Every structure is written in C-alpha cells, then in structure tokens.
Length: 433
Image (cartoon, rainbow, N blue to C red; front, side):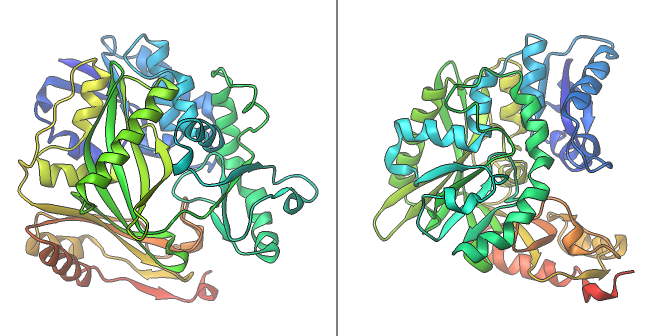
C-alpha cells in the first residue's frame, strides 16, 4: 500500500481516482482539501499557512508519504512540488516550475528557443502613475497578470479607453494571486532579469488567438518528453475568449501535432523540467500553417481527466501518480467505452442572479437517461454570476458536462439532449437582495 498525499482533494476527482488501474494499491490522504487550497472561505490565499497545514497533516499520517500529487492551478501547482522537495520525493525543480507558472519568465525562456512561436510581449506594472504610457505594443493586445488562472483579469485591449476601464479592476484584484505567488518565489532562485517583475505585475502581448487551439498533455522523465494526448479547445463568445468545450482526441493534422510536440520538448529541455507532468497550449492557423505557443502549465489538466477515462480507459491521474512514485508512467490507449469525448462548459454572457439551478431530482433524471454523463453544477440559487470566483472576463460558467460518444454528431446531440434536462432560471441583477 502506497501513501499518496493529495493537494486540493475533492469529491469529483476522488471518484476518478477509483478508476485507476490499481486503485486498491494506494491510500490517498488529503493534505489540503478543495475548499482550503482552491476556494478558501476567507477569499484569501495564505500560501505559508496552507503549506504549514499540509505539513501538519503529513506529520499526523501513520506512515511516511510515498508521493504527492495535485491537479489544480496555483497555489496547488506550487505547493505540491514544494512538499515533494521538502520530503525528498520525485518531482521537478522549483525553478523549472516557476519558469512555467510566471508568465513573463516563461515568455523569456520560450523566446530563447522558440522565437517564431512567441508573440511580442512586455512586462507592465499596473501601479505606476501612467502605465498606459509604458506600453510599447500595437493595439489590439491582450493583458493579464503574470500569475493567475482561468483567464482571471485577462482583457483584450483595443485602445486607451479600454485600458482605462480595466485598470481599476486589475489593481483591485491582482494581489489575490500575486501576493501568495510572491511568497512562493521566495523559495526559488529567480534570475536577475525576472526578479523585478513580481506577482503584482502584468504581461501584455500581441494577439495570437487565430485558428485552432489545442492542449498537449505530456510529461518529462529522465530528460525525455512524452506527449500521450492532444485535446482540442473550442472557444465562443466575445473575442472568442471563453471555452465552450474541450474535445479528445484532437482532430488537428498529425504533422501539426508533431511540430507542437517537438516544440514542447525544446522548451522543457531549456528550463530543466523533469519528473512531472505538464500541459502546453498552442494555436495553429490553417491559413499560413503557423503554430503559436500560448502557455505552459506544470500539472495535468483536471478538465481532461474524464476525457482520457472515457476514451483511453483510465484518467490521466495515472500519469501524475506514476511520476510522483518515480515509476515509468503507464496509461491505456483507446481502451475506453467511447471513441470521442468532450467537456462542455455551459456559459452565460450577461450578469444575472440564479433563480433556479438543477437540483438532485433533475440530476437523477439525467442520470437515468444518460448514466455515462458526468455533471458538475457550478452555481446555486440566489448566487449572482458576477460574484462567482475565477471566471473569465467575459462570461460565467454555470455547469460542466463530460460526455462520450461514438462520433462527432452523436457527441453534440448527446450534449444538447442532456442540457435540456438541466433547468436554469435567471433574474436581472437588480433583483438581488
């Protein structure tokens, strides 16, 4: 029996862990649960306090840890490798983690080995007296914090008026991730070129979101990069900035995927990333056959785990677990019940108050008609959409549906039928009390 510590333990992913190839060979221990690591009740991420709490729980275990895993964004993506280092467990160097998590640092390293795949970019201090005058990029451009996730505080800027509108929002919210990220950076040997750009800075970059988007899911072990799956990302809404679904396997040309995999290997070798999973997001434009690199994440994508289970026969937590144990990763291929799978994100593009959301009876009805669909309701009656945490700047996600099927047509129809069974009702924001 192997003792495995989990950072960001939650019910949905606990169920997925039961679908591993040998789930009975492991004892999973929640070092931090979802509410603590991902959505603290206080609304504040206290990085040192979270690490200390995880350490206390490690000390209370009846036997030493054999591995630590996690699948959530920051701070989980930083706490898990930090705990691995402290306890002598297999994992990546903290500098390699930071060189992906810090968006400006990551762009510098990408530009050094993949200059044709990187947009024009610059760091920006939103707290200077006149930050607009420091921008040396043509409009439109995209601006976002050097540390955030889920497109939090990411905005497309068409001109000075746009920038003036979003600057107060950035100044008010950037510290939510920026301050705990600065705490993490105290454990990292940060290059002199990066050191002045802390977590309370932004990165501005020219627009690269043209064509098709996808995510490579892979890992590095003993210096070798392996990509075991490519997932398409389909966007919708204003500026095409909101995800509507992730679909696996990718429908991009094989040659395009190969070029992306080669680029991923170059970058990981550059920063010395090893003994851990990653995912890397790219765009491909069929007009000029050009690929562009969007960002790198130091974890498996939690959103993709059910897709691998439905198509390949096991969630890719299997990869993260094997690597954390120092074992050669193993995941089945095309052994699942479906040929194609997707995570659909039900979204609303205007602020509102939830008057009704699907309840247990609605979910039971859906389960009777489509027992192989997984559903997560992301909101509740009485909640105002604009008060939901970690939403992108242009939409609100109200539900997730994980759907598998035998064909593209069947997949879309299966989703539409399921969505009709999930009743949502909305009221104007002014009705909130």
